[in-house]
Length: 106
Figure 1 (cartoon, rainbow, N blue to C red):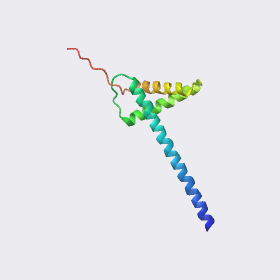
Figure 2: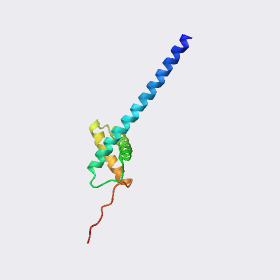
Figure 3: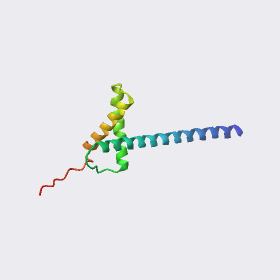
Figure 4: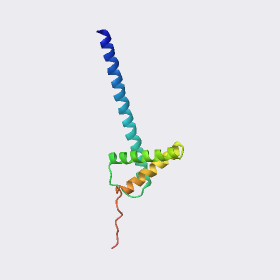
């Protein structure tokens, strides 16, 4: 009976470590995506019609694209960050989250 309880406890600990590790990984990805998306929004002039969660998702996608390209050309971490921010800025523009400039001809 004690052996079954011990295996049950080990199994429960293994599952909790897996769930906790996965949640930390997801949180880290969203926070890094938010940082990349915020940097992309910072370098683009004008306003964007997108919220914080959308910024994180676009930054996450830009980070993945920039990371893939950076690893393909064997760039360093700094260049991968720059490529990630550029990719996120391109995604913001291409996906139509940028507001059009209004003409003030009178």
